[in-house]
Amino acid sequence: MYYLYHIPGKKIGVTRDLNTRVTLIQGYKENQYEVLEQSDDIDYISDREIELQKSYGYKVDRQSYKNLITKNNTMNINATEQTSTFPCPLNKLKGQLMDNLNLTWKTSHGEFEITKENIPWIMSNARTSMFNDTRCYIYNKAFLAENIQAKEGLDIETAMGLMAQYGDERFDLIRQWAQERGIYDKGNSHTQYVKLMEEAGELAQGLLKKDAYEIKDAIGDMVVVLTNLAALEGMQIENCIDSAYNEIKSRKGKMTNGTFVKQTL
Image (cartoon, rainbow, N blue to C red; front, side, top):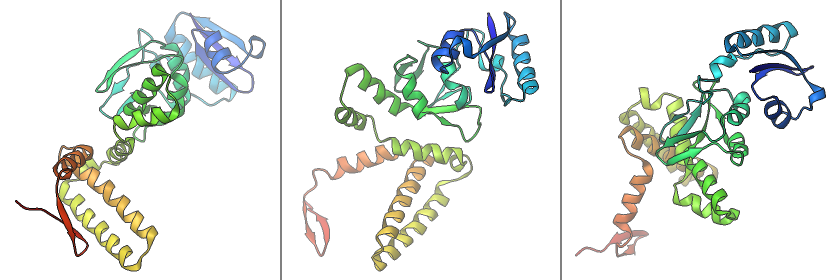
């Protein structure tokens, strides 16, 4: 059964569980809301919700209730290597998560599950997609680290150490930023190389002027460009860094005129 509820002065919504959605999630007691209609017809109740939202002068949902709920009341979560995307806007996410407790989905980092314990983390870390504001997403590596921390009962310092084992989320953020701006779809390695040389020039200027801010900004920009250049070549910058370190970690040599010169056989 679907319930069309009204919180006076606030909103009109639909739910199948008034206690969970309205009382537990939104914090309203039974005497603070009213049930306007109820029906087992999701098409009718979805259309009626929008109709009454307009009639009462409330904000009208951009997606109807029936489009947020699949046939089995489970979300079709889209997982990529970096992110898991939920098929609903951020302001609808908490209710959707509560409706889909114990739902699992597979990612390259393992199988994830929606639980009452991790919903607060998801809500604090979810972001609206820049491609489609009716969708939102979380970063998989960060969610994995959160799950490990919760399961193991770790303190924050130990948890931060464990997070490092699963990579630095900042590179994921850079790749997500680039993907959303079409750099991977419309850009190429040559243009990124040109951009890298431009940033190297700015770094040189900063060094000559001893401008700490400009030096920091240029180095950061170069890391962003290198991250994108690696991605365009089908690589991850993390693997490039690991490969370089493994190459030099046992290297011997000496400093000559301010430069490390490797020992030759």
